[in-house]
Length: 588
Image (cartoon, rainbow, N blue to C red; front, top):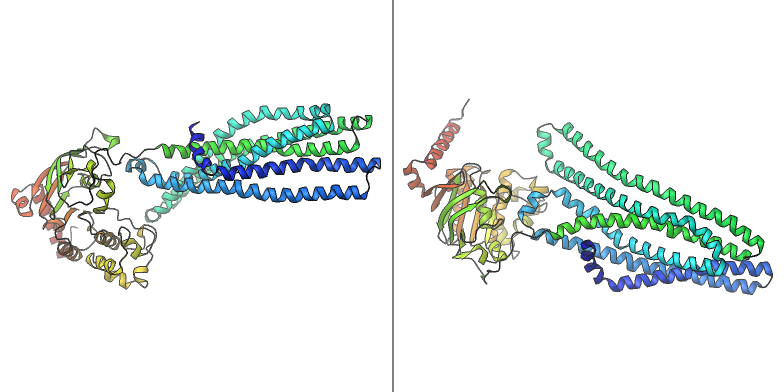
């Protein structure tokens, strides 16, 4: 199976630990089967009067030595086998995280965060149990079963062994059906847990919206349904275990009863000694573990394979965005951008182009502004420049090179990007601003914050730059989050800067100051500003107006005003709104 081929790569790295662990486990099993034999010899010797106290103490010392050896061996196999399983779990978790970072935006658009979190927690835990306890249980049970049966047949009595073992053969048939049921039910359980995790994550992230719209009862009811489904799927697993384990106990009890009846008869008839009868009953008791282990092993295997299948699916996912075969050894971008009939539709909506026929030339060191109504394709244009999505190789060129010829690491290193959502990590303000910087320089961090007009706000906080911003920057205002994100981009000092509606939450005075700082500090570098307000972009070298994915107007502010088209219409509406706001009344 492909899942086993996948996990075998990790197991091979820890082959020595597994070998040492299995060797220790094998030694423990060998020592274990001799204890009933020594007990039987003591019993027979005392009954026949053929052994004195010296002989008893000699065998007792052997039993103590075996017990000490078993204790050391148990420590050994636990250390090596459990340790190896934990190490593989850590490596899998690290590799999975690294693989997720390689995957394209399409994957994250199609998969929920809660589901991915479930893979990192429950699924990897089940895989660990499959690689640790399952190996131990399967090997130990098999070795114990073989050695105990051999002792029962050759040291005690072959016929008595057959009578004791016949009921246990029923377990083999039950194991097959139990395994199939457990695999299906555990897969359903893991999927239910993914749904539960995703709902909790989404509710916690959107708690402010839930409270603002007074939807606590509705969300509680939705969570109750998901929680109930998760409970039912877990109970499905428990019911299967609750049915199988008592059946195991019943079969083992029947075997023990037959042993007492037939074994007692053989002892009375003189075909076996009293010591052999005592030893045989101990051996039957030792068979309980392999029988119980069979059920546990099937459970672990079923759960582990179900989770391993879910994990393998993630690793099989290939990124859409990778360095192409035509990639060149480009070390640095200069900032000249050409869009040649740029057309793009999202993969799940290929019949509906978001951008169509866009043609623009942006000289190095100039500022291009993009204006348009909501849904006109402005943010998509920024995503395409970053190559978060693929388009035809000849449609976007930077410094004369197709995007496919530029190494992804260079492309994204040399483009600083401030997205609309202004994501901040749950960390200090200083760490958030320094996130994309190659070198950590406090003076540069402070200067970037000053250029983004956030430095004075930060200094007003009691902890200053050490202020924790909370999850997604929840403790900051919208404008403070935007300016912190701008500072992060400015600190990067990249040849190309993209601001995607990054000034929408700041007042006009602050906006003017930030734009002034950009003009002074980014001389000779290319800047792309996406905005809704004309006041943000009117001083740009060129302005592109998008409407329903088409580039309908292009030119300077003055040229577009003279055309009297969409740009002028938007300008006049915004001026009217500004005038009404200044008069203090607004529209009643």
